[in-house]
Length: 282
Image (cartoon, rainbow, N blue to C red; front, side, top):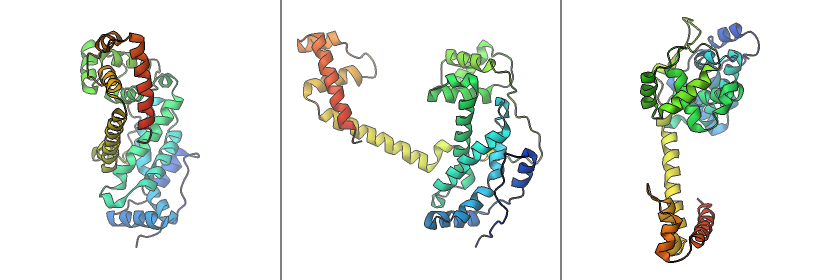
């Protein structure tokens, strides 16, 4: 049976130095203790078990928050947001998957910090799409200094991130408008850095299962929706929307079916509406 931790959960709202000192007092859990507590939480909604899991990982949140100090936001606020992510991770953690909580929690901690940064950093409010957010954080981690990227560096970075050079240049322009340090600002010898051995969150079993299930549902839903169409409408949708390249034009299909391009457009819209309704169940 794991030993109960009597100390209360500290708050980063007061003295940050005192908070960091307090969270460093909580010992790490052994694998056996972690599994036992997680099972108690899942089976009985044991809040004391959840509390101990959270307490033992608060220092992880502090370590991750230090990596985002270059954004010019208060470290205490980053820690508070990261703690929210940690609590979400504890609630969703499944000890039977064979993954340590620290590996599972880092995704949730980073996600909350990212959302906080994007809400509060003035330039990044332009980065509204998922692709722009990913490029924003990756570019900041890859760029080694404040100097503008040379052409060769821009091309190399674009190749690394799998984006266009113009996208890298545009995001760098947004970054250069906020004069903050890009390097972590702490040399604390007691800093806890689990990054070296943490697994990629995208490789976690739960994430892989979620992606596979979503892909299967999309394929099944699309097949079901296409089967609900008459042959002519199906041909129009496949030619207009399901080709990887060289999609057919309205006039090409009009010539094929010997009707007007406007009639093809009407059939296309009607088919899309019908498909949307059919895919709603998926």
